[in-house]
Image (cartoon, rainbow, N blue to C red; front, top):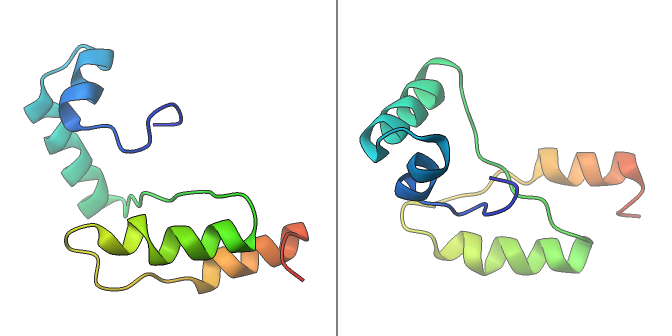
Length: 81
């Protein structure tokens, strides 16, 4: 996921040696039982704004993005004044 953050289940399956159905099933199980979330990291406040209002907002099914944890983390690291 670090190399290709938007990897399909098919790609994940090829790399890990499992079927794409197994990859999808494991993802669903982790997201439902363990609260797995997929997060993105960008460099700088402007890049974050562009990511949140561009590619992320355009994904099917994305109706809102919780930004408070992201901003809080950036402020703790000194990335945002």
